[in-house]
Amino acid sequence: MKKNLLLIFILYAPLLFSQELTGTQLLKKAIQYHDPIGKWKTFNGELFITMEIPEKQNRDSHIIINLPKQYFSIKSTVEDKVTRYIIEKDSVSIIFNEESKLSNKTLEENRLSKSRAKLLQNYYTYLYGLPMKLNDPGTIIQEKIESKSFRGKNYWVLKASYKKEIGNDTWYFYFNKDNYAMEVYQFFHDESKNDGEYILLSDEELVNSIKMPKIRAWYKNSDDTYLGTDILKSSKQ
Image 1 (cartoon, one colour):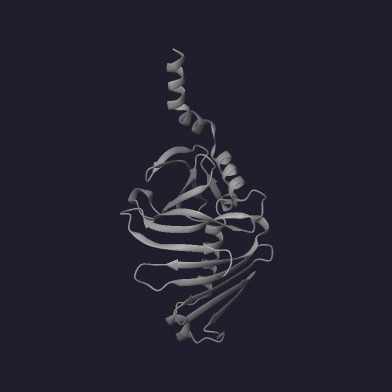
Image 2: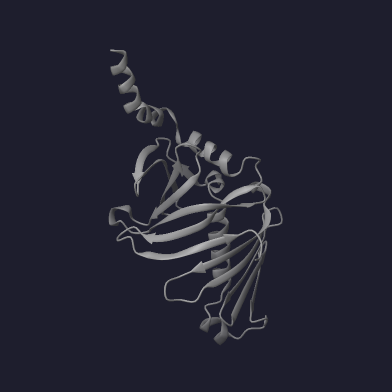
């Protein structure tokens, strides 16, 4: 009888634990793993990122994020083209191949704009600020979490959506069951269509005491098409 009870506990313990652990609690544990001393709120640091895309030239980017001063800059190099955006609070500067006085033709041909600068700021601040960014206002955390298998590994899965003024995508975050490290995230524009992408995270880079994903490999949800990989370094090498 005791053996039967032990077997039942082993089989159903993960399910029982997932019912007891709420989304808020899971997020707290994940943040404790990635940002144990709470450095993200005052983050001031540099990221060096190489983007590898199939059949395209690599893009090397040097990013500076200073949250207290509301400062963001990104300098990206693709072959002989060097683009730099600088955002200081509400001020946006665009520099292309060391020139700041740019014609409309140059802006259009190279897809340069203030709106793109803001887009890049939001993109990099959000992705490299995860999972801490899930505490931002407007984020809706589903309290019921799941135990789910993804590509052959079991995870605790947290679902997040956003208020309409923030965004319409639905996100799922997959956390290691042993240490709560974030190892996968996935988003859908319309989940019923299985659109959007999933991102596999591997290795870690310590940046200002924060454990950030070193390698992010992107794939389509619909057919697992590989889209590209971002490689993070905390210093220029």
